[in-house]
Length: 293
Ligand code: MN
Image (cartoon, rainbow, N blue to C red; front, side):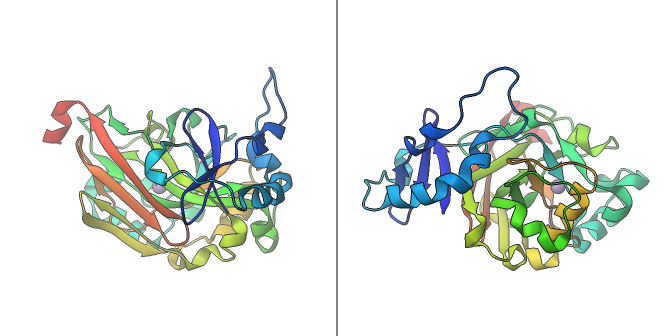
């Protein structure tokens, strides 16, 4: 099932014909007050809600997709975990290009030597928003990544059990300012984490290693790869992440980007597509001088 958020805090199920407004099914979400939970209550409730959603959409009216503004599909993830250099050819291009590695040895090591990193939740935007280039003095790059949304709480999860902990998949853009600093610093600018266009529940993607994907900028193909080439697979990433962090419902894992990373400027249009999930178009905005890049 494809689940979206849209308009003024509404929930939808995306069908072949359009979007069914299922907001009333989500009225069952628990009310929460301060201190708010550190997980996403919508994702935590999904196992109970999915059968109700399936029943609700039968014969329901649909809204054409072009008549709604899609919103961030996970409103309150507790954390954004991200995998660096998780495709061999991307590691090679980082090692080959001074603009990518900035002579920082920590940018050129293999994922198991670096570990994972965290992106600030405040960097998140949804498909209806634009990436804003606030540091046009730097090189700003696109990175398309399969994004995994965790469905239930777990620590020290084995790779063999890991897919049981996945609620859904979506498209992630791990936007990046290049430079010598730590990844968390350069990848957490406002608007530098994009998720969308919607969640595809895990039952629709039994094996996340089977997905081709592509990113274009202004219609030109920049990144085209396949999740079978991940260095650490989705189950291995969940095992690795959960050996350090307890994972909670709504936590997002950005699985890493393949080769072909490149610069974007204000005025550009990024288009991202992943098999079995869908397509996401994001505008890039910012100061006019970003064009000079
Ligand atoms: Mn990345």
